[in-house]
Structure formats: structure tokens, C-alpha cells
Image (tube, rainbow over all chains, first blue to last red; front, side, top):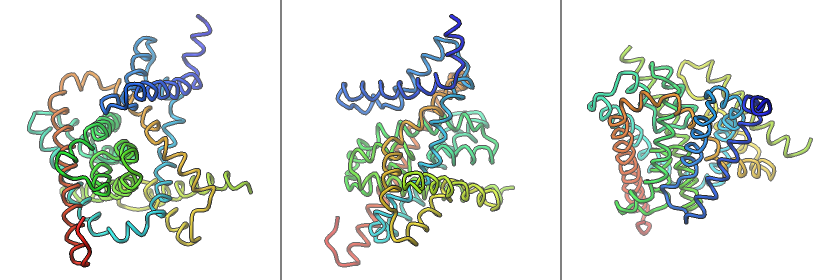
Length: 234
Length: 124
């Protein structure tokens, strides 16, 4: 029992648990034949939430260990410069479609999320937290803070959007006849940031690259548009 | 200097500089995104990323989805709010995600076709 008391509070335990849960989720995903509903991110989160419930562990204790994985989100975002450079000729040739698509995507993402949540009677705090839901987590949390949302709720909504985009993105786009890997990647990166970008990389490396570009540009554009809106509306 | 460590130091340094620039600017732009812009400028200036940086970036980006797990487990803190507002939140997430996918993918395809027709290439 003493050993468990020690283990349950050490960061090493929860860091190990996070990576093990992800490996198990990946294994299940693989064994089940890679169905979109068994998204490894969603599975590992459910698994870890179950462990936290069962062991009565508060989230901050868990995060003390898991933060080392979480921290790598920043460097990973910086590293997007590398595939961006590798595909720079594509990016330059497709600059116009990319910018047009991402600008309209960002406006659609914000207005439809806010409109639907408001219409269905969501609380002010929830509506403010849902504004940056399509943008990568570190950017979205900063935006939520600026407009008076709850950054940790935003993190959860961002994640929900990401998993949703990864799960339904390829199907929705194919149903609509949008099969060009560049269009698919751009749509998935813009609508559902890094998680859908990771899924786009599995469709095609080019789709993943466009996903990364779309994710970086839409993060930048959402931050700029929201702060301009705040300046204008006071 | 070992090239692998140099690559890690370069990435962290770009992020640090990005965070510093983000604090200094009036628009709340995200530090890591500015860091990516800086790293891109450096790669262009040096004429390529080099083997070590390329493999570090590849390794990190290949496991991108793992990095979202810790924040996702944070959902556990908002179960009460979600239990009360699950319908509004659920419809907003699903509806907005589908709309955004279709608008972004559709606009990209239309503009790409228009551009390629103007350049006299075969359409997509």
C-alpha cells in the first residue's frame, strides 16, 4: 500500500502510464483493423480517465507527470517548419487556394460553432470557450483566456474537435466528392488541427503536409481575427 | 557539437524566441507558431534543414497524436459542465466541424481548379 501511495504521486508513474495507455490504444486500433471510431487518442484518454477514476487521482497530480509529453506540443509546432520547407514548391504554387480556403474555413469554424452553441442555449463561458475549438491546443488556450473563456474547457473542446475531425474528416470529404489529397489535408488541418493532421498523414504524406500548413496558418489567422474582433468590439 | 543535440537546441531556441516575440507584440500571436516562422526562415537561409533536424522533426511529428493525450485527460475536470450542456456542445462541435471541412475543402478545390485552368494546365 505504501508503495502505491508513493507511485501514485510520482510524475514518473503518470508519464509511464500516459505512454503505455497510448501504446495499448494503438495496439487495439491496429487489431480492430484501424476503424476511425477507435481513434488512438480518444481510446487512450478514456483509458487514462478510467484509471484516474478508479484510483481517485486528481487531474493536477496526473498532469505533473504527463506535462513532459504535453510540453513537446510547442517544439512539435516549431518542427512543422521542416515539412513546410520540404514541400515549399507546392506551397508556393498553391498559395492562392490555400489562403482562400483557410480564410473561409476559419470564418466558418468560428461563426458556426458560436452560432450553434448560442442557439442551443449554451452558457456564456461555454460559448467563449468554443470560439477557438478548431485551432491547435496551445494557441486555442491563449485565445480562450483573452476572450474570457475557460482555457481548460477549451483544451477539451479542441481535443473533441480534433478526434471528430480525424474520425469523420476523410468520410465527409469523400462523400462530398473532395478527393484531392491537398484539399483533404487543408480541410482537416483547418477544421481540426493536429489530431486530424496526424490522420491526414495516414491518408497520404501530401495530405498531411497540407494539414500541417493549414493548421499553422489557421492558428495564426484565428488569433489575428479574434484579437481584431476584441479590439473593434471593445 | 553533436548534430542531434544541435537540432534540439535549435528547435527550442526558435520556440523561446517566438515566445519572447509573442509577449512583446500587441497581437496575441502564439509563440510556437512564430517559432516555426523563425525556424523556416533559418532553414531557407541555410539552404536546407540538414539530416539531424530533419530526423528530429520527422520523429516528433510522426508521434504528434500522443502529445494531445495529457490535455485530453483534462476533460475529467469538466464532466459536470458537459453533462449539463452536452447537446449544445455536441451539436456545435459536429455541425461546425462538418461545415468547416466542406467549406475549406470546397474552396480549396474550386480555387485550385480556377488557378490551374488559368495557367492552362489540365484540371484536377
